[in-house]
Amino acid sequence: MKTKILIFSVLCFIKSYSQNMSFNSQDIQVNNFIDGTLLTPNNITKPHLAIIIGGSGPTDRNGNQSFLNNNSLKKLAEDLTNNNIATFRYDKRVVKQIKTGRIDRNILFDDFVTDATSVIEYFKKDGNFNHIYIIGHSQGSLVGMLAAKDKVDGFISISGPAQSIDNIILEQIAKTYPILSNDAKRVVDSLRKGIKTDDFPMELASVFNKDIQSFMMNWMQYNPTEEIKKLKMPILLINGTKDLQVETKEAVQLNEAVPSSILKLLDNMNHVLVAIDGDNLENSKSYNEPNRKIAPQLIDELLNFIK
Image 1 (spheres, rainbow, N blue to C red):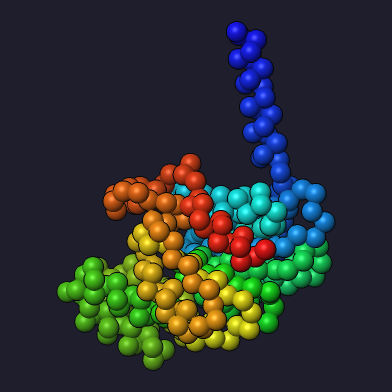
Image 2: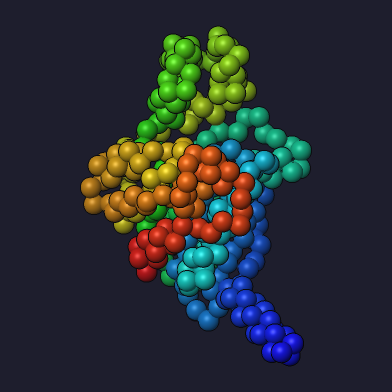
């Protein structure tokens, strides 16, 4: 009996190992700002490539930040490559700056677009891939939108806002801290005019800190519903119905801006791309639960679009 158990255990290990080795992994430095990981499926000469762009904040290539560890982008990349789609995901430049202790206080939203464009150009020059697709998550949706124009074969937005960031901020503050709405409007009006200000209550410091106002002003000039109209390529828009950060109405608005785009609203998927059966507490806890699996319907929709 022990021999049978041992043999069964060995077979399970071999099966698990072979599944994990269905692709090759290679760390790549695109330039001085961009470090990332390329996954390529075995036994495919020239696969399609999906470039994954992360969301706001100091998000690394795996979808994590200092106090948030969910591996959402890592799992997304691995699931796609296990289905014969090569993937490249990369650290936002601020992640590298934090690691080296040399943070650029003058960083702009346009720098993220420059980085995404550099990644696209790197792999187009590489020539080892068939079609190239952009997958932008959250803030990465707008970044990818701006970088994709005339450069890739398809664009995918996951949890991508349709409104400009200034309108999103005002909407969120009105919902969560309505007493501060007038203060927020005053600051936003100033930034819209290109004028920095320190005339705001301390409660709004994390949003309107003067150190990030140049970044915010740069970001505010882009309206996703206008930018997406400039893309002359197939477009897939995805949003989860349990996304606590980006409501499904945002994806609907993007779809209305480009009616030829494909809209998929995935039941129970949240912002970190996992399925939530319970309440908001379970939803929030999932941001720090890296062992949860990616919502399977998300992978199905991505594969149907790319393949």
